[in-house]
Amino acid sequence: MNMPQLSRYRPGTDLLGFDRPPEGVVPELVRLVAKDGPGSRGVLYSKGGEKTVICIVHPKGDMSRHYLIPGFVDAGFAAFGHESRSPNNDSNMTHEALLADIDAAMRFLRGRGFEKVVCLGYSGGGAAFTFYQAQALIAPPGRLTDTAAGDPFDLNPLEMPPADGFMYAAAHLGTGVTMQDEIDPSVVDEKDGLSCDPALDMYDPANGFREPPEQSRYSGEFLERYRAAQRARIARIDAIARDMIATQRSFRSLVQGEDFHGLPPRERTLLQRRAMHGQFLQVHRTNANPALLDLSIDPSRRTIGDINCLRPDLWNYTENGFARILSPRAWLSQWSAISSRSSMLDNLPKVTQPTIVIGLSGDNAILPHVSRAIFEHSGAADKRIERVDGDHFGMPLDGTSQNGGRAQISGILVDWLRERFPV
Image (cartoon, rainbow, N blue to C red; front, side, top):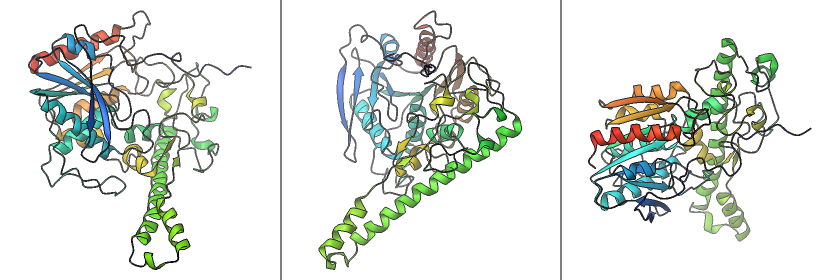
C-alpha cells in the first residue's frame, strides 16, 4: 500500500517568487555586515529617484524575490528583499541577533537617500520587524543588552533607524506564540519521539480525530486540557534548554578561572572540550494544532491540513517541521512562548507608525483571530485591516488564477502606500 499524499504543494513549486524582475530594473545585489560582524545580503529593486523603499525580511526565508516586489516597483516605490544571516536554517539563530541584520539593512537604505522606509512583515517577518521597531524607538541605554538565554548581546550601540510604516501580510504573532498552538502536548518523554499520553493525543479517535479528508471534531473540555498541556510542555523544554546552557557555562567559568592554567594539561584539555561542547534540542512532534483538522475552530475558508501538508497526523511524526532541531539558545529566543521577546502582542503597542494588516481567508497557518489581534494591539492611530481570498502564499482558493489573490493584495497595499508615502 502506498503512503497517502502528504505535501500540499508539488515539489519544486515556487511559493513566494516571481519569474522576472520588473521592467526597466537591474536588480542590485547588496552585501551587508551587521555591527556584531556576521554578514547578510539583499537585492535592491529601483528604477532611480524613488523617495520611498519597501523593506522585506524573514528570520530564515529569502525575501529577495517576494511576489509583491514587482507591484511596488511598478507603482513608483523601490523595494529591498533581505536575506538574514541564517538563510533556510534557524537552528542556531536568535531574534536579538536578527535585529542587528535589520539594523544593517535600515542603515543601508537610509544611506542610499530614501526619505521613507516602509516594512512589509510577511509571515515571520511581521514579528521580526515589530520587535526591531519596538527596540529602535527606545533611546539608549534602555534597549536590550542580552538574549533570551542571558548571553550578552547589546542593542544599544546599534543605530537602529526606525521605520516609517508597517504592512503586515499573512503575518503571525511570533514563532513562540505560534509554537504554543502547534506543539504536541501528548509527548511524555522528550527523548522519545513516539512516547504518547493517549488522553492528550489529538490524533486519537477517542478524542475526536477522524482521518482526513474527513473533518475531526474536538470538545471544549478536550481543547482546554490540550492547550494547558501545550503550555506545560513549552515550560518543560525551556527548563531543559536552560539546564544545557547552565552546564556549558559552568565549564566555561572553570576555563576562565584563575586556577585553570595551574591544572595538568590533560585536565585543561578536558575542561576546554566541555566548555566548547554544545548540544542541540530535538523537539519532537510540532504539527499538532487541533484547528488544522477541526475547521470549526476559528472558522475560515481554509482546508484541512497545514501550510505544508495535507496529513498533519502523519507529518507530525516525520523529522521535518518547525523547530525540530535547534540549539537551546535558538529555542529560547525564537520558539518559546515563555522566553521569546519577539511576541507581536508585547511589541505592537509601542509601534505607532501607519499600519495596514491583511489576512488571507484560506490561510492554513494564520487563522482569522491573528490578523484581528495584530490590528487591535497596534499602537497606530492610522491603522486599517483587510481580508483577501487566498492561501498563505497568496494563491487563489479556486485554483483558476495563479495571481488572483496576489494581485488583490498588491493593489490594496499600493493604494495604501500612495495615500501616505511619497512616490
